[in-house]
Image 1: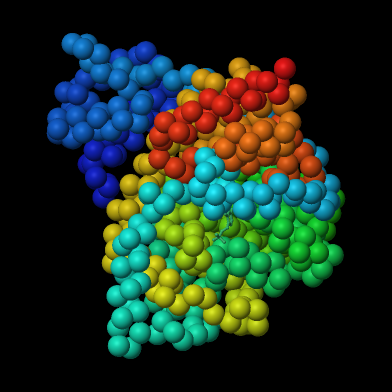
Image 2 (image 1 turned 120 degrees about the vertical axis):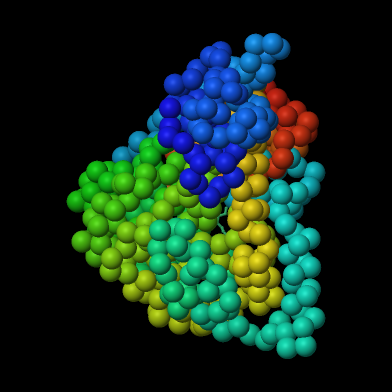
Length: 480
Ligand SMILES: Cc1ncc(COP(=O)(O)O)c(C=O)c1O
């Protein structure tokens, strides 16, 4: 049993719930086991009985435990817990152009089609985002007599936002200053500028395999080649695999999503980050870190950034508020380390400034709008949605699937039986009114044909539940 949870700053019932949940996750408590009685657990954790009752109610809502009349609480049977994580991510690393990103345009067009069930694009639902509050904040800023809303905000951009980023960087394990940041148009521009600053056309960039399909587009546009290194379903990219790849090939940069990876959901453990950063720094290879999902852990502490282990400015940290607050506001940032001046100059040349009012509205929300309280609520929502989706997939998909078990974010990576062609599934699902993301989009070299990524960014509802049933049926048929 864990030590007492009284000392933490988080609401105590959440810590109590997390303590019990970790016992379930580590299988110290198994489905069907009786969980400690409320009285017993309150004594063990040195907390009040109402606190434990609140924690148990939360775990019931999360679908982890259930009350049995006159008998107490039990760990629920959860079929999805028995499903293994995807394998087959271990492709040999060889330098490659990204294969056709064929359904990409269609996936982008699907963003705005409300007739489609949105399981394709990695998008949080509007229902969860604080759209009304942000709009009010933005309007209030615009109405101020001295409002800067109509002027350029020349790079490095809003000092107000950069000050908030500096303050928050302590949570990421860094101690960055406002002057270390440049404000960008989403994480996309941050990564684009970082690649421009560190690479020349024809160069090779080490990427995870699979990786976010937006990177494929950026690399191709910049005439860069990819050196894919497989990720482990649980622990992300592995130092040995990176070293092996680097012995064989010369790379100019390393582009990684270390926390709650898209599409796999894995995270590099904090203890593996230092050796990875040191290994790359010794070889003079810049690391471009995309931390866009870093604030969205399902339990416990936020993961540290690779940037937290950077001693010589060789990590370029990129991020945005697209997955947490408002993708349409297009507010992102980059802490460019040794390339900061070059990145800021490139930003001035290419887009000069970002959207001023959205940037100021986000800075205000992060400073005074209860951002941390809001983050706690969406973390919980995403965890619930991911759990519900995992259960529903296991109910209706073919028996021999594998399914990721992300500890943060809202994406699931599903390995279907080898016979299922995910591009065919993508087209059939679309005809049935459902958007999904097929595996080859995430592959530098045309692999992952029998994989799909599922977005769990929307609150669970009967329409989504029905769609998962339809997907399962289509996948069963394609697998025959
Ligand atoms: C890993 C990753 N990076 C970047 C982006 C795009 O971010 P932004 O909307 O901030 O440009 C996404 C969107 O899905 C993503 O998953």
